[in-house]
Image (cartoon, rainbow, N blue to C red; front, side, top):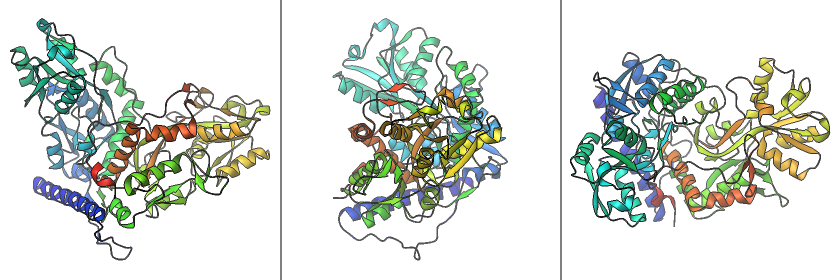
Length: 587
């Protein structure tokens, strides 16, 4: 029964994709595209979350893992599945209090098995690529590798040029095939790529001198060379391979559970222990940590989700306008300039989205939002996107969805220079203001709850009101995101910004000063989320993001620990071309 239902869901998934592409193409040709209004939307059909499927199967999570890719997933000397990925999902299952069933998968069939419902989660050294993101969703990155080349020691080959006119093996279904071709073309090295069904087959062919090299991710190749001294790894990593766990497309609740379990495993120190077990001597990957508190456990998480009856992108195409919620009093992110027009870093990003999607940077309606109103405005469907220095917080993840991070800020304090305050401790017994609905306000409340410091917290509805209270001496400090406070202190002598250890060391356990910004969008619209992420990455690749960043922050900014940071925020890039790029722009 499970396979029959999964096949039907797969059919619906592809039908939805087809209708979206058809709508985009019809709009591009000027044909009418039906868009449902408030009263005539077809009834949405609830979809079963992976959480429900796990419960139905006796609290058993079925995980697809590799069995031939040491040290991530392999058969040990006892014939048991072992490896980094396997230890990691076991740690996550312990947090969720569920059992796991491990199912061997290959690079060629892992996505197919996930989409068909044969597995609930894929933890199989899978690179997060844009083409794959069109079919499934990914967790946050939990490991970063890169592609290299393995050769026989006796060949005396030390660089790619030594493989000219040779044959290089790669495994079917992996990113390695296309990426070695691109790298060889870039380096002007002619070679032939030979596909193999498994890594064991490719390794055997290399050992038998049937091919001249094997290419895949470097961690696997180093392990192979360690176990087989007749091989050696040559050259540097020539790609970046961010690994993510695969989940069913659109199932935001389960994806959030996976992300937050990964973060908890890292906070508990378990991730580093597992990493050091399989990669001794290397520095563990630093997983992104989101502030806040997730409102569910695995046992209490919702087990259904409602996909949109019509994708948000189809509505944008029909209306030929993008509606974006932005700040209006938070320079340099969103503010009213001298002419009364909305301006700022986030505003420019909104216009860049409109330019790419609709061919016109002015084809955007900017809706003013406050920190308190922005989540309800988005959840209610009044805006398409929130680009409003929005910190991705765990509790907000339950109400809306988020893009990948596009900016990293930090919590800081603004004080007068004459106050003499240098750390948060200097404000013990004093008044600190923050804007209601922000991470700063939540952090202050958590600080008060711990009773570490006796701070009187004063809430404000607007950033400008909080600053005005500081100017008038009604509060002794304002806590907010550091970049906005830097902007104010630069324009107003007599004020200084406090940040770094002087704040962080007083915060409750698990609370960080880092505030990663992401774009807010409606939940469960996987195709639209993909499109937002792909567009951000294209902005990074063609320099548009860096240009906007430089306009508002210059060439040098201050990092979360007070250090100088010379470059713009590095938006994570996923390999591969964007499958929707040709359909984004209207002519």
